[in-house]
Amino acid sequence: MAGPAAHVPMALFWWGAMALCTPSGHSHQGWLFGAAVCYSALWLNVSLFCFNLLLPAYPLDGGRVMAASLSLRGVAPNAAAQTTAATAMVLAAGLLAIGLWGLVTASHTQGVMQVSVAVWIGTTSKALWDLGAAGRAQEHPLFADRSFGSSGSSGSGSSSGSSRGSALTSGAPGKQYVRAGILGPQV
Image (cartoon, one colour):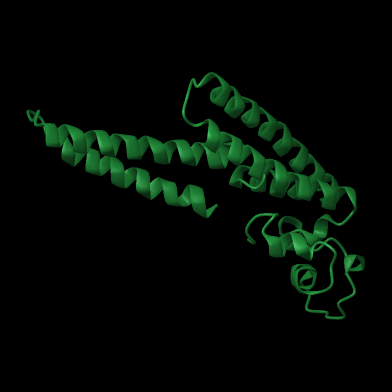
């Protein structure tokens, strides 16, 4: 949630800067350019806030909120992982289609970035899906912070009370995903 939380003060800053750059009665090109830069930065931050928080595609914050909401509603970790991953993969496919369409028709210049983000969302969601399908969702940082019973230990021998620590440092089969950064940043 740090990303969306950072966009709010940045948007407020650019809104204030835009107000300072557009004093009434001035039509000097420098003032107009400064106001245009501030306006663009303001809407960039608003757009990134909405994209990151409102799109329920893991590893974006909206996907993390979705996974946490499913867990809070009592959905089993493996089912929550697969639901979160499936939703994200559908959204990634849509984003990929829009990006490829933009590249093919040259209708907009964001096609490369959209394709890259779609591939990133798709690959991280596929890894999450695989863990859920294998019954090992608790090894993922999204689900490891919650205690889902004591029988899910991976055999590390430590009883620190945190399944997250044992899943990330022991011989757990999913740790290569975390180390490689495939599953996104650790929370």
